[in-house]
Amino acid sequence: MKKRPMLIIRMNVDPKYDEEFNKYYNGKMAKFMEQVPLLVSSRRSVCERKGIKEYITIYEIESEDKIEECLASIPDTKEWAEWEEKAVSNLVKGVYLDIEY
Image (cartoon, rainbow, N blue to C red; front, side):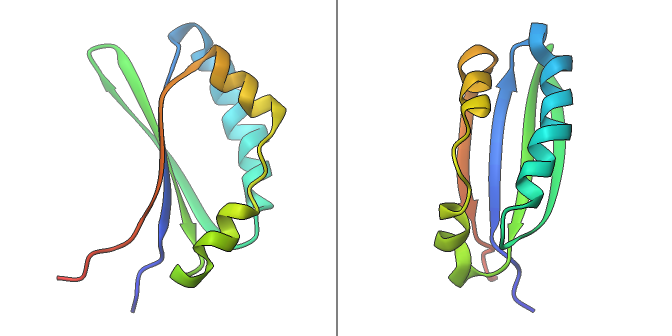
């Protein structure tokens, strides 16, 4: 069985906004992303090293041939742009495919 492509988003959040940001991301942002066609599942995790938290969210995309269509259906929102400006740093996004071995 072929694995699904993964949209992976990594970021750090300014500690003074951490609690407020997580309420936003786990509530509003999660509900928003649930409405994006072709995203079939998601999970969110955090790693803390030396007092710095790095968050990662993994969204599974329905299939390889649907990657572009899926990404095009994720609109930019003013609210997310505001979070990026005030509290998010080291933001990295990419679509990852499994390697056959």
